[in-house]
Image (cartoon, helix red, strand yellow):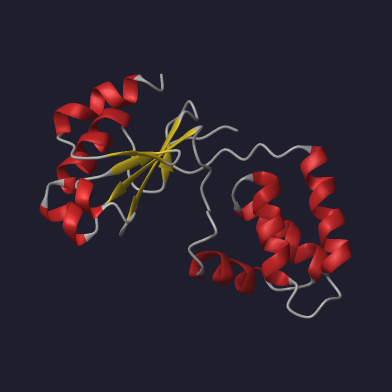
Amino acid sequence: MACKKQGVLFSGTKEQEDALKKVISELKGTKGALMPIMQKAQDIYGYLPIEVQTMISDETGIPLEKIYGVATFYAQFALQPKGKYQVSVCLGTACYVKGSGEIYNKLVELLGITNGECTPDGKFSLDSCRCVGACGLAPVMMINGEVYGRLTPDDVPGILAKYE
């Protein structure tokens, strides 16, 4: 998967396209099929770039505007690829008042990306979230589900180094 900071270089394969077309052919006559088709498409590609949304539109006859509207409305859908290591910083109240904004800013500085983006090498993606349920460890960040708590900005470089 290739990522770049300004937009995304789409690199779908013929196998992925065939898998998506198979899913669509199995589901397209079913009432309410759009959400399951989009979920399966995201499973296949890892995200829903405009190229995939266009394939869904072409194969189902559903207007691209409707597909895009669903993709941008529901938080479960990603329009940008995720990195091998998915970094998420909690910006919920407990974490924020204890300095998670500074943790987030340090990540932006070190990774050279911002919310929802992926590093050019595809290694890291960065997202913010509102609560991970670890308020007692505030401020908190996660990398691929592993929680790091009671952080200071000075902790961030050492944590990222574990994943390089």
